[in-house]
Length: 258
Image 1 (tube, one colour):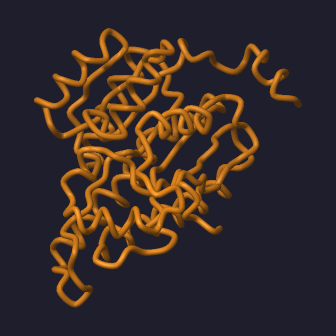
Image 2 (image 1 turned 30 degrees about the horizontal axis):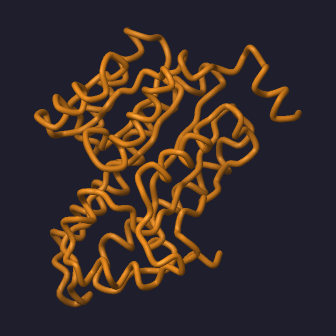
């Protein structure tokens, strides 16, 4: 089946028909992607803990945004939000897990507190599983779904001084590969995207020395942009991306070597 045939298949949804859940959707990469998809007519459910940020993001995106205050580590929050969306729209086509935290950085492994490590793992890894478990059954019932977990180049290579974050993103990659295999014979496609440094609020909050350490490793010698991220993510969650699953897409300015 050619891409042209796929795009003409009436069983596959158009952007304006789709409902996308984007975690961490109130700012950063999540907000950037939500704005991008909303401009194509997609209904975007913004999942975030920050009520004030959700209000601002919704106002900026406009009528296609559906704010939902959700803690992605909480199964009850996720289930309630999914039920509300299914009641309102009858479908969820896309899940993008952008919610993530770096934890404390610039410290050696023996200095990392278990409390901070567990907090990062809870948001970055548990959050991906909680949201997937809440949404996947409705996708499986329809025989269609696109899931994108946001990993990181640090999950492939490790960044010194970022033990918790790097470990969590390596776990996200492993989770993606398992899910890609498990659902390969269904209409679900589960992939990951591993960016290098993208200039967001989260990156801006890091020590400049930490950012320089990461950008110095990028052959392109710059950060990526939110617009570049959104364009690649759009393809990954599109109906046309029907044969790639369990794959980690690269967005690293030449840094990734596998």
